Length: 96
Image (cartoon, rainbow, N blue to C red):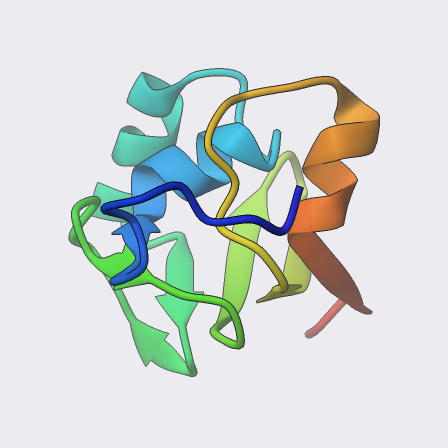
């Protein structure tokens, strides 16, 4: 799933990408976590769910009692099965 649908070549909203990548169970939970300051994009704090992310961006997420560092490898276009979601990122390992 590395193909980017037309219209998404500029990126995808952070909250939507986190939902597609199955980091959070819902977009609403992703929005709450982003707004609470639990997400960094390219080493910068991010509290805007609508921030556009692209392949190559690095995201650090503090959730579920752990910190995950992920590099976006694909945008995706839906919330598919876990195997599809894992194709959207490369896990850089725990930080902190």
